[in-house]
Amino acid sequence: MKALEIKGLKKSFRSNFLIRRYDILKGIDLDVEPGEIYGFLGPNGAGKTTTIKCVLGLLRADAGEVSVAGQPAASVEARRRIGFLPENPFFYDYLSAREYLRFATSLFAIPQAEADGRIAALIHRVGLSGHEDLKLRKYSKGMIQRLGLAQAMINDPELLILDEPFSGLDPVGRKDLRTLIFSLREQGKTIFFSSHILQDMELMVDRVGIILGGTIRRQGRLSEMVERSTQYYEVVCDRIAPRELAQIQGDFASRDGHFILTLPSEGDVNLVVESIIHNGGRIVAVTPVKMTLEDIFFSEMAGGAPPAPTSRSGETGGGAR
Amino acid sequence: MNPGIRGIAVNTFRESARNKMFYLLVFFGVLFALSSRLVSFLTLGDAMKVLKDTGLAAINFFCVLIAIFTGINLVYKEVEKKTVLAILSKPVRRDEFILGKFLGLALTMLAALAAMAAIFFAFILLNGGGFDWRILLYFAMLFLELLVIIAVSLLFSAFTTPILAFIFTVSLYLIGHVMWTYNEFKALLRAPAMKVLSEILYYLLPNLDKFNIKNEVVLGTAPGAATILYTVLYGAVYTAALLALAVLIFRRREFQ
Ligand SMILES: Nc1ncnc2c1ncn2[C@@H]1O[C@H](COP(=O)(O)OP(=O)(O)OP(=O)(O)O)[C@@H](O)[C@H]1O
Ligand SMILES: [Mg+2]
Image 1 (cartoon, protein in one colour):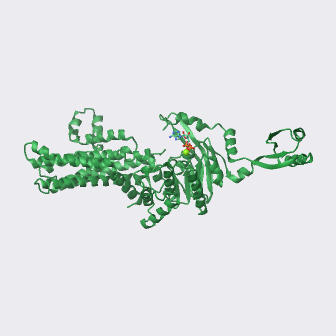
Image 2 (image 1 turned 30 degrees about the vertical axis):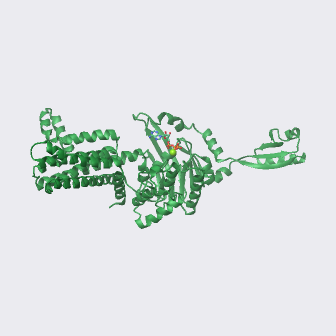
Image 3 (image 1 turned 30 degrees about the horizontal axis):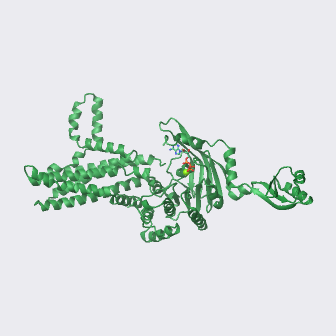
């Protein structure tokens, strides 16, 4: 059973006068396996937050099915198993972190005795120790984000849905969050998080789904996506005359006394390397250059249909709300 | 009680309890109630009667003010500041959210009213008056009216901005207090369609005058048990209907 499954999710917004309709999600299909870290990647305005809000029932989808561990996501039962961190979260600023978390436990009917221990542990886990009794209006952005993570974990959920969890965090905070997410996976939790920051994704996710223009363009294991995409090989050599090298391989660059050749396939590499050695040259390095997530991302952005929602967002942004 | 409703009610109460504006309004309510002593010096006639009359009116006014100002923000602020996202993504149903908000504000008003009433009773005793259970009945009826007002403002808060909600709520409040002129108004209408419409409207608009028993209380009388029972029922049904409507509207809402 999938931890999260979205089938044919569609969502459109209407402009103020109900005249124009903007199709934001045009049939999202994705599935998240239990126990994995799933990265939901897409540029600004691609529809990540919209998708997540439809999953949680905060927005009403026009069409499609969403299930969490086999149950319809809209059900109260499903929401017991989910922890959610909203994008740029905001919590009651007249409460302290401890008070807010206590409020959260009350919504789950967690008994007081158990709640206090859990809250103390979570405060420590997200790195808010020492600030737990400070009113939230005195919290910094990163501290709010940490509290947001704590409240998402308050019910010990099987599935964590985190919308831009890294935003507002400094490098230490980002590292802490990575560690936290890994430890959650170790506990057997499933983590689904959105981001447009490739570096965050590349370092952590098991699988990735790329959303663009309201559809999922690619989904799969990050390792496979990257593996299958070895683009070319780079051969670095020296101690050979440029003229001789040009006869072996016409196209090369030189840098710091080295020559750099770019070769499309393994077969070419063998031939070229042999010829260079044969001509008295020295091989300094042979490197297979793989596509990074960034390359994949940009090739998707360039390859497909124009990224409609982003270009449209400026126009509709305030007016349609 | 359902954990969601209770959690939200307690938190709503706590929000008011930590709001300086709330204490300020309660303070002014008390201040104006006590200043009825001055009025009773200046007017002719039964000083105690004037004292009660003016004092109760002051408490009434400030309670209504607190109820409206808190009520019109109740749901709107949660949606606007996005605090609602982290709540409705937990196992809290939308009707539980609305009911929790309502009960939280009801609790707030109960606390405010109790504080004002206690001070007012003490004040009457100090001025040589006796304890009059009718005044207690007056406060009970006022609380019932406040429940209706909270439900009205909550309903508007569920789909519109505080400014509009304020205008709507105050309009309904004012109309609700001139419902005794409604029959004269109806008599002015000629067209049968208008007559039917006005009849329907009569039952839809809140008849808030029913809750105001100040004149009787000040004169030392009180409505009979049957009238009171009817008023309580009316308040309960009217409030429940408003809340049901608020839930219906809130269920349809989307949260950006
Ligand atoms: N109420 C609305 N009316 C009209 N358009 C909307 C509305 N809400 C969102 N949109 C549009 O939907 C698109 C997707 O928005 P969404 O917030 O899901 O993007 P996102 O992928 O989360 O982006 P980001 O990375 O910036 O958070 C945007 O183009 C946005 O302008
Ligand atoms: Mg977003």
